[in-house]
Image (tube, rainbow, N blue to C red; front, side, top):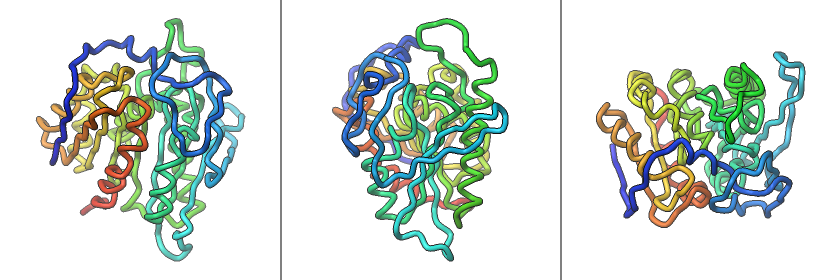
Length: 287
């Protein structure tokens, strides 16, 4: 187990921090690989120009009889007769998987021979089965949103395993912000599916009071967990994420917490990605 701490000014934890979980204006396109801008208020559903290396796909979601988008990247090093490592990558609030399956993640997946899939999570604000935070207040439009969001992730995982020769001992889960909360939730609920988990600036505000209950199944499964965080993050305050690091240490999880000085809610994605790939490469299921 290792923990890395940079200098940071402690901020107060508040669910109100979730009001800044998105990054750009609706329809604003950005150059592939540039990543989302730093911090900003939510402005509704967003679009980012896809990385040209990433496939844009849809499938029919039987529960609602509608097409759901997802993304796929396959490294040129993947060979049909050799089981390949697989990453399921969960995007943040208000966007789609093109906000995470791009740039540095794709560079490293290509270099290291990975397949990457990015589910939509049913919609841009689904929370992947973790407690749903409704930005701006008001009721959840879809009562079973969390259920559908979780199911979409597991559907995309099943489709990837059906289409490609993937290695069940090297299947990994990562997510950013809302997706980081989803990675913690789906990591513990489906612990048998993963070889390791990485949560990037996890917006797990509503799971904060039950941290040890969330982490206990991860510990019981012997599942390694990494959390990366920027100390300049004004969206997910560093103080709130340090409590997850402390809980991991108290429970004796195999883990790393990496706090990067000068990084904010956007820059932590690409800048922390090499450590995530190092962590994944070091852990195979059952090792």
